Each structure stands twice: as C-alpha cells, then as structure tokens.
Image 1 (cartoon, one colour):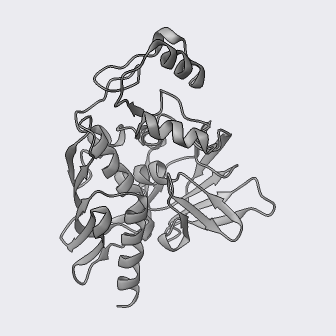
Image 2 (spheres, one colour):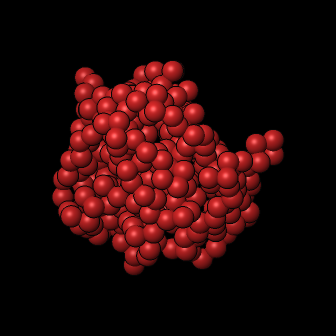
Length: 305
C-alpha cells in the first residue's frame, strides 16, 4: 500500500507579501490522513479554515487566492507547488494575514523547510484521482490550451509564448517528481519592467524587489531611469544594471526559467484538486486562471462519476 503523508514536524516561514507588502508568518503543522491541505487564518477570531480546493478559488489576478466566507488567503501557489512536488498529502497551514509571503519568488524555501522536518507516512492509503477521459480547457483568443490525458503517472509538458525576444517561445517538462526540487522548485517568478511600473501604479506588488523576481527589461535605461529604479527598489544606484535583458543582481538559473516557473505554478494550482492525479498534461500559455479552471473542470468530471 502506498501511504498518505504529512510533514514530520511543525515549521514556520516569515516574509513579506508580494502585493500587500505586509509581513506574514506561516506555521505549517502535521495533519491527519484524509484532511488534505487546509489553510487557517489564525489572525481572525474565530479562526477560519479554508480547504485548498479549486472550488474555493475566488481570484487569479497576479496569483491564486482562496476564500471561505469573508476570509481569504492569496499567493498560495508556490507553497502548494512544494507540497505537490514533494508528495505531502495533508497539512494545516496557519497564516496570520491575507497573503502567503513571496520569499524568493520560487518554491525552494518551502522545499527546504519540508525536507528539514521530513515527511511522515500515515496509516491510510494514498488516493489518486484518475481521469475517465481526455479533458480540455482553452481560451482560443488568448492562445491558451490546457489538455489532460489519462496516464499511469503524473507528467507535464509546458510551452509559453511571449512576443518579446527576451523570452520568446520556451518549453519545460516534468515526468514524475524525482527531479522537481532541483529542476523546477527554485525557478523564480518573472515580470517585465513595464508591468512592474503598471502594478505599482495600481498600488500592488508592495513587497516586490529585485531578489524575489526576474525582471525583464525590453528597453534601454538611462541614468535618470536607473536612479528612479534604485529609489523604487530601495537599492544603491550602482547595483541597478541590466545583464542579458534581466534587471537583477541574480542570473537566471536556466535559459528557460520562465517556462519552468510557469510549470511550478501549474503544479501548485492543479494540486487544488485535493489529491494527486494520474494524468499527462499538455499546457500551452498557462496562467493561474487557466490552471484553476482546468482543475475545476476535472473536479466536476470526477465527482460526477
């Protein structure tokens, strides 16, 4: 029998929310079999439990947000990706604010903490979801196509398309989870500089900086622009530079890091099915809306069986 799992001990991660800019503490605790991943807004009285399920998604604008009643938790995708990639079936996630911290913009801080406390088998059989047939969700106008095909194990092929030559067309894949931590988990979120400026104008990404995202620059930067960006990101002007089209002190880990990060996000969003699924996914131009809509569609099909 393949057993369900939970984490071996309690751990805490503290950081700043990408959009709120508020410091949030997340404490993850072991959970019983068949409880799944449950988020708990510990700052509310009484505490509000939000099961990490696709039907609880209320927003996918710049991240995935779950809610129950008036309580919500946003930017849950990197944490959920780590749970999925490492095979954690059950956990209680206490969050003392409305947003999971962005940390370094990847899933690796969560992976490192989970590996530190270990993963514990539980006395219950792991339940896999199996597709009765092929499932498709698409938005032809946006060029998005999400295809799930019945398979013996989990695998993903991801392709992204950007007009900018800095990213262009990229592909990434994952067959099983053996290489998840090394090849997917550390890939950071990415954004174009003009998008950063637009989001800041909307009073968003208050917690963004050059250490938690790859910022692609598709224009030349003069000295005045560099000074403005230095002030914006609270950096020394001399540290503001563009190397290979990236406004960072960090080099990309992989030439296709954007595609790998999109795959990372997909792993987190599709785990909102509430259990691991045996399927092969072909995802073209994915995003949080497409990921979660596919999860909702699969959930409805399986529930109706």
